[in-house]
Length: 404
Ligand SMILES: Cc1cc2nc3c(=O)[nH]c(=O)nc-3n(C[C@H](O)[C@H](O)[C@H](O)COP(=O)(O)O)c2cc1C
Image (tube, rainbow, N blue to C red):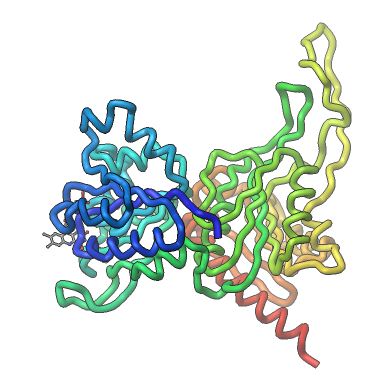
């Protein structure tokens, strides 16, 4: 198991006492843990408790001249490879959703490029509150943020319902890469983002893919228990917590990295990447100068990552994505048959507000003998539903394969 540098944010909720146990479990697993507490958290647990358990000084204040002598908050934001906020209060969710940076923890969350995991904990009415739910939706649409929980059950105030923080052991297991869910024990390889095909040292051909759908699927598959490798073209997104990311640039790199990941063992391959179909036949060594005449580029076909993986004799269960502007069902079904896919997720990118670069998506999924429509919603919420359907179809396909 990879050792992580975990920045644990503790906010002012009654579950703050449980975070002391979380620090103990994370330290036991060999992770480095530094704790930042909000002023609210200090009312519930003394910083000394976290200092003793983490073996590191606890930071509580942003405007602390001594700690900030060397821009301590930026150093902390860069140090972390994962930020975990447990418990995450309703107030903290609201401030994070709005991008506030009015204390040390919110400022760190603004400054860090690391994935941010939130473990909400609050009274059930506070969790159900319309404004809290609006903040939760905003956070769910943020690819840097993953929410774990809350759980249902009996609460400290005597109510019963959603709002309990996941138990420290469950949080530690997830951080250690031992999530439980419909994809537990399965290995997924997911491609995401665009590719860049160089013309010369400063120019390239690419497309509008943001990678958001692939990253949301990787986070959802991880949360569903899968061991996930994300082969990503150049995007402006943080890798989801617990996911192994392999960064690539060109279509040829993408095929090589995806094939390598599949060679290592892969049950389900999901291709969301918008791989360039063509690349310049030659990449100039020097920047091509502007002249009085026109410039022609000769383009050659790129390898087809999806068809190559789906065509392997040991092909995994393969899910393709199709971005179409007309006759979506016809083209998607053709592509599924031509490329020997197990399923295809089709989106009509001509619809306003969904698809490329958007935070929302609406899709229709096809598989041999069936289809299901998914109404427009955030890519994060949609990713969770797609992962459930993919898990179900995978199990059905495997059960049919083993029938006598
Ligand atoms: C006894 C007590 C228990 C509380 N428990 C919670 C809780 O579990 N979850 C929550 O969101 N807020 C809870 N609150 C309210 C927060 O402490 C309050 O909203 C505070 O502003 C949170 O600040 P912080 O997010 O900066 O830590 C509680 C308050 C009190 C007095």
